[in-house]
Image (cartoon, rainbow, N blue to C red; front, side):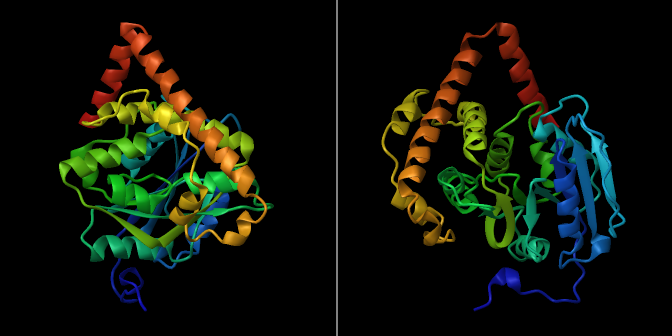
Length: 324
């Protein structure tokens, strides 16, 4: 049975796309993803790639590609903020559709075609694609826990109207009304931006055929990520009209996780990967959830007990990004 996003006229004129890729010291991964984009089932003359150096300490020189439109720029004011880097990419873009993907990813051959086609056929403003995980060289318990808890685009779109910049397609005119991402933030800027777009009235949808792949995180990277997302979630929580008490989610995190339910939420993960690893996966789900909520509480205390100067600076930064 054909899906709507699979159906397209090979002779139709497709819109120009600007693919925005922030990176930090990982030029080899950028070269690899540029190669993957070069091989897309999409007209090369309609593709513009914008790579944004987010404060690399190593010399940056990307290898040549058959694509003529590759732009390498720098984010100098807010290094190590991927959202500031993405803002610089939006400012430099010329495409009708802005596409976001992470440097440490690689897209399916039909990724662009399916994502753009779904956006146009459904008259959507934002389309979130699927993110699958690579467990090489070995599917460890921590990597499986990462895959179960990270980047569930379908759930994010359907339950919250949010999406992540790991794989989204956006009509450029959307940014004219929503403004850009928040400047100088490390995590959560994509969720807050998509929620703002939804509130304004833009249509956000999910396309399971527009697939990109990411390497699953090992133990150390998993917990670093949970600390980062916990801190970032505090700023998303502040914008929620009917938000829970600030300590509510911490106590919720103390409840043992339901591994079977988590696995059901990611049905495309083969059950064979979990053979003999379920106790370890359950442990990482439990502990990483608690760590994430502790990071949230620490950010809450830092924000509310910090100096008035720090609070005013953060508010000014958030207001500025919304006005862009």
